[in-house]
Image (cartoon, rainbow, N blue to C red; front, side, top):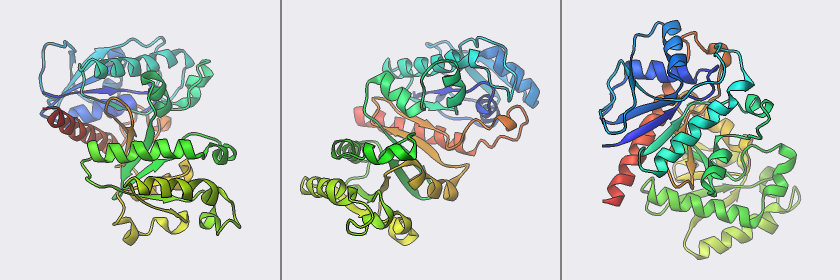
Amino acid sequence: MLTLALTAGEPAGIGPDLCIQWAQQHSLPYRVVVIADREMLEQRAQRLGCSLTFVPYIESEWKPQQAGTLEIYPVSVQHPVDPGVLDPANADYVLETLKIAVSGCQLQQFHAMVTAPVHKGVINEAGIPFTGHTEFLADLTQSQVVMMLVGGGMRVALATTHLPLNAVADAITASALEQRLRIIDRDLRTRFWIEHPCVAVAGLNPHAGESGHLGREEIEIIIPLLTKLRAEGMNLIGPLPADTLFNPIKLQGYDCVLAMYHDQGLPVLKYASFGSGVNVTLGLPLIRTSVDHGTALDLAGTGQADIGSFHQAIMMASTLAERAARFQQ
């Protein structure tokens, strides 16, 4: 009897819309609980013209998700919400929903969490340093994590996440890459049930350094590390030039691609899957999935938000939670 926790994300964005529109359409054999402000959701549903039955969350009363119902774990916003208009006063509310979801997963109250998009800028404007869900959840659980997106027939993990481009090269160290590759290898085996995962590793520089003429990170850092890990039995290919790495025929032989930085790997995946991709955080002591897009403030409250990625994130979370439950039996 699985329970999934959904966090509604930035209240002025499309996160509440996604929760409402999804709940109106979908039934599941699992319990689905939205962690959010009830009044805000009711107002958004009315604005969207969605007729939903709102049910208060009572932990002991397990029931599967039924289309047309929305079970709510209530958390109050600090300030009334105007769709499309960011308000730093609600930054603490957004982070509180995440903390509740994490705590619930750690206590086995929830079996996975699915996060709607947050707005990094407005949280920072509230005076709270914040670079993204991935980093926040890593700090909250004191975990080393890897950001991986799934979609378009690909899994793309990142060696670095939300860094300025001029900081990427310094962040590519042997210890950091080793840590990420070990997490990827372990989670692909234990969560995705891939017996001997093959990971293609991108080079950092154009043409993977062109034998050192276009940069030496491949020669000095990446190649020695891959040689070491291959000797331990890891199935690693590379470093490969990123401009030819995403060849469809070659991708068929890879279980995951490790890109060195955000905009090296994600543009290709999002081109192939935008609106249906899923963000998965590897390395956490819990299951977390998310959408592949942002808050889309201009669409909030309009009824035009596409629930495709949100639905896929929920389905992947349920699959991973089912596997985890079977593994523990």
